[in-house]
Image 1 (cartoon, rainbow, N blue to C red):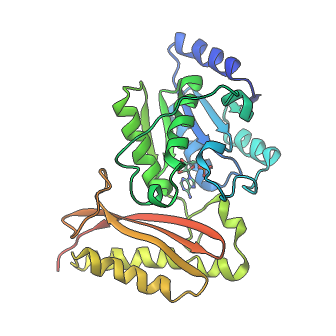
Image 2 (tube, rainbow, N blue to C red; image 1 turned 135 degrees about the horizontal axis):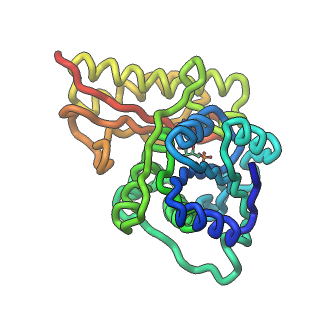
Length: 284
Ligand code: AMP
């Protein structure tokens, strides 16, 4: 496995592969890797001749007062894990490689980024879309792997790739959870023992909505209230939002027709956790 920290070198290597018609798989990450990341890599490894993993904590997607400075980082451990999965390249650029001082071009996906996390994190999706575009131009993947854990991000990237005629396929992969159901996240390390226990309420809320819908409940307000009730019972947890959305447009639903996506962000202590899941209507 090789570590590349220079954009030009990454792009030249990808171009050589493209010339030979060899497939390139790509997993962009911010590092501090866990099983969720590793599953994306395993999928990429299965599908493609070459697998590139990027590790870059992207300053452009963090707002004022967010955790850019304290975001967990451990490059040595990460590169060991990437090597174990069998990726060929870790792309590990510096901030100045990707954003030289005269940088001034941004990619904006306007609609699917409006609500949900876009409402509470105004610069987030512009930062994500911009860095992912740059990484796509450098790594030239045929397939790029993103987790459903960050559902709005997955939909945003799919929209961007379609709208801008980018020549690659975006593959969404299921959320990987801890044994007790908590969605894996690099930010889970911020939680205290008590916070970690309380954080389970997101998964419990999701399951209760899935159960209510399977039992035939169609009213979005009632479904969302079932989730709220569970989360409000945990004192360290404060709801940022819980919404029932259309699975591809992310428009809020008043009632469930066949399938929806329950999407939520919840503060637990000082950590903002997100989770989501498919909600299917069953027979009453
Ligand atoms: P991050 O390093 O948090 O930016 O995440 C990099 C990629 O890993 C994104 O596509 C995430 O959606 C994905 N990811 C993060 N956590 C999980 C998880 N628990 N299950 C599946 N994918 C995940």
